[in-house]
Length: 104
Image: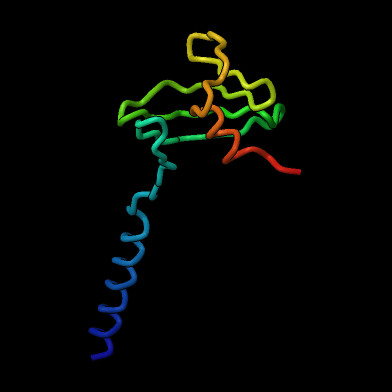
C-alpha cells in the first residue's frame, strides 16, 4: 500500500513538472480602432539611451508591418527602409506616444 501511494505521488509530481515545463507563454496585443482600422501593437520596446524613442511592431487590419522607430520628441517615425516621416494627425505615432510615453 505504501509503495502504491509513493508511486502515485511520484507520477503526479512528474506530470505537474512536465505540465509547467511545456506551457506556452501568453502574449496579448494592445489593440485599438483608429481611423476605421484595427491597429494592434504586437511588440514595443523603449530605447534605454533615447527614452523618447519606441521601437514597435504593429499590425493594421491583421497585416503585420516591419518594426519602426517612433520618436516622441520630434514626432517622426523612422520606417524600416530608414525613411523619416512625420506623424499623421490622430495616427499610430500619437497613439504610441500618448499611451507609453514616460512621465516624470
